[in-house]
Image 1 (spheres, chains in turn green, brown):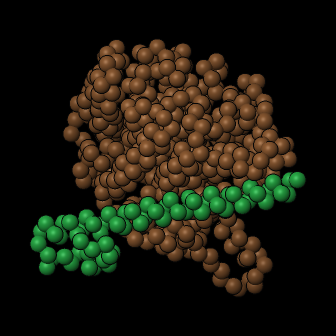
Image 2 (cartoon, rainbow over the protein chains, first blue to last red):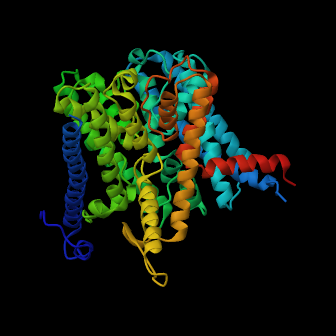
Image 3 (cartoon, rainbow over the protein chains, first blue to last red):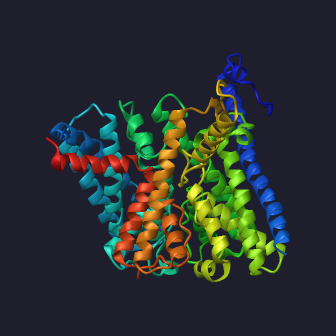
Length: 64
Length: 500
């Protein structure tokens, strides 16, 4: 089983594989993309926390 | 001349509304199952009564409507409004029978708050209610986040013409796929994937905090439902402050931020276009306004010296602000502390965050980042036009799935919805002041209800005047629909009365 993400064209073209392998490969590809997608969303939230932290620190410094 | 709707029009509305209500009633099977597992037999009977009434009303409406096809846009908007109003009234039956509410209006308030993902509540003795009743609160808020019509489209409608108008009438306009039924299914797919992963992480956190396994599972599931739907309901009256856990707060922020993202954005990112999250006008607008508002609130609180160290200041400010901005309503500060400790500057920053809200086509409320971004760009475009040569043809782009040009129609529609929201906020605030509440507190609660947020500074209570309960319930409904379906419903009633 490969963890490399296929292009949409490659993903659709799994006809040279057997049915069981084809389904497994397809699920694997989509699973990896899903995890990477969720990681991007969580990463953006983490970025917001970092930026928020810096701005909070600056505001506190300004207020003093 | 105003044309009175024909009998055929009413039958179409009855058929589709009946199907949605029957489907909504079936959701009560979840609290019934919960009641059976935890031997809450009296509540099992109450939910069974609620389920039977929903089925009777739903099937009765379908029988009255008969086989009537031809769903048009005006029917769809009325179907959405009628379904939501009926679902609110019928969903309140188990609440009313439970004896945990002071009046039926309080039950209506809580169901509307759940379905619109607001999170304000009038339920009494929250810390000691049965699991089945709590489960019903979270089912309402989770399903309401996706939309009861989206739920019906996913499971009950197959290729019916005019279904896009049903979908759009519930405040979601973007198609993720050409087929609207498949779009609804994608929305549920995204939500269910997050449900599995988010609940697992929250259960692990609850176990790490020392909760026993069954309680950890229930709390993990419920907090996830409250967070992802940007609902704000929590299983304890102290909300997420009850957990006293930084880890729990961080996980909640991740989940309700994900819930506040546009479902189309989720779909694009999950299909591999991960750069979209950095380029999209909604996420950029959100990041900018959140940073500005966190700075303002931090400045106000640092001046008053409420939090002595940097870490506790940031932890409190950021959590309340992002909760308000995503219109979630989770809090780690006691309600009255917002008035007595936070003061006007920080409260105004939260009000600003709640007014703006998060992404369109998400579970969140408010004006939405998309509209704020478009209005800002249209404003800048006009300034450029004033400063530039008269013959210059100026354009401005924004990115939302793909590059688009700012055009008059988009800017006008965004401005129209924004002005309507601001007018509603002003009216609800005015009603609060008329009822004797201080201006800032009336504004805070009014904006919280109308933007479907759920943060409270202590005004919302069962002792509140019934006029306020009614007005805030209406504001939640209007805010969730972004006015169109609700206005169409009022127009429909009006045309029945005076039409010819």
